[in-house]
Image 1 (cartoon, helix red, strand yellow):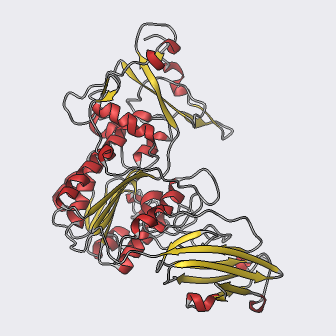
Image 2 (image 1 turned 120 degrees about the vertical axis):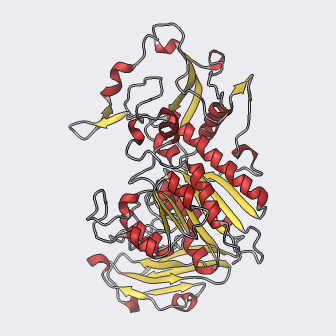
Image 3 (image 1 turned 135 degrees about the vertical axis):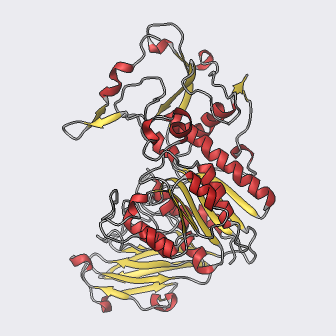
Length: 524
């Protein structure tokens, strides 16, 4: 398989056209790979007959160009509207395509840009790291906590800092300027834009979340057209939006039971993460499925070695040829709670592997394939901690991402035909504004230093493990978010559990969590 298409596929983007009475999918200005599969759909705003419809692609009948006969739906979802579908088609030739749909006296047009892959494949292995919600501030904070800073210069560099090229990428959705992990990762994995909460589909008017026009995912394309292996690693649920985007097609990222089936249909060689509950039949305690399908057994019957804790991962990774690791019923727990605070957060699953462990295990298995591999590694807990304004956990999870990148770089030193990409799917709005200093005083405003009053924090890493020995030091980073709900600011890390800044009241409205009302440190 020629794989040079990967980078343009990852960064290809389209923008939605103006709303029209007749909607065409793929949408206007779509970009797609020659040979990449997709569903073609035209939606009409009235009940029609097939004879009323005329659809052309570059002036030719669309069925002739797409090589398949269309299905005409006279009343879509029982409504007074018609639609035309042709599923699972592709365009073999690169170039510009103009699509024109005429019916009921109305004409709609879209254009597509179909690009070729290179004749010669350049990278045998591709490792894509996703920092979910990763921003420049996350990276800066991780560097300060991990390496320190003296007189304005960092005392060390992150593994990410020394990658060869650097750029910004945009991942907006087709229906909003505010993006989520589903539509952003879906864009990377298909080369097509999508809508908020959607994975591997264009958002059409179909009522069934699984019946929207599909875009072939990278996992499907590699499996269909090459002998490469595919690996998916993350520290949230495997069914969560980012890992799911490697294989999935749904309007609703919450279709997690169905996403497990989509993983099974593609069968990546390595799958490591949380989300055990959606693999278990409903008769099993803790299951979140609504049927009795046991996907743990189905994967084992398909030749997968199952591991459920860090020890099992370390023991089985080297000899396994297919590996399924399920380490938590939900999202896995972050490095701060697991390795350093050792609080009750991890009591139910005390032996979860680090993202570094999972990255190394995935490389051990995937590198056995002489034809190469694609590995996606997500640090999901950057995002999971940033949503509730818990920057200490977000920054330490960013350090975990960086140490996973360091492992991949060591692999690439021995395997130079390896491409490493590190990117965020979207960002959280947060800023490091200065420091919080436990100096004497009666008002917290006197303890928050900005500009020259900020100075430098006093985190230390005496054991050189890349993490601060203590996050609750006397002079800490002052970090604030742009998505503040009503909440009580404590100016200190939450050592017992992740921050819960707001909760719902009796009116189903979010209000400040009074559990933190009395811990505001007026006097320190």
